[in-house]
Image 1 (cartoon, rainbow, N blue to C red):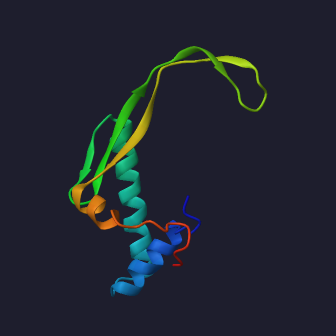
Image 2 (tube, helix red, strand yellow; image 1 turned 30 degrees about the horizontal axis):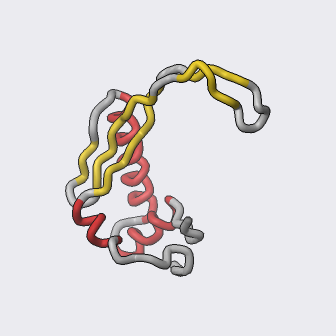
Length: 106
């Protein structure tokens, strides 16, 4: 797994430095974008960002016998939705040759 982590604050700072837009405005746009993505997923819409990827909901089957890994207790899990992301062709191509994901520095 990659050890380098980029947070929302890092992304906002990066966009702020790359543009002439105020940091507060960049933050508001970023938050609004994330809210729209969440809202669309709550309405079971598919979000397609050409050249980047697609966010969609997938249904996970429920199970009568599941185990809580912390307590070892048997529990039942109802069917539920999970968010899935499929990378677009351009994103897949951009990351295809990367093999040393744990050693890159920001």
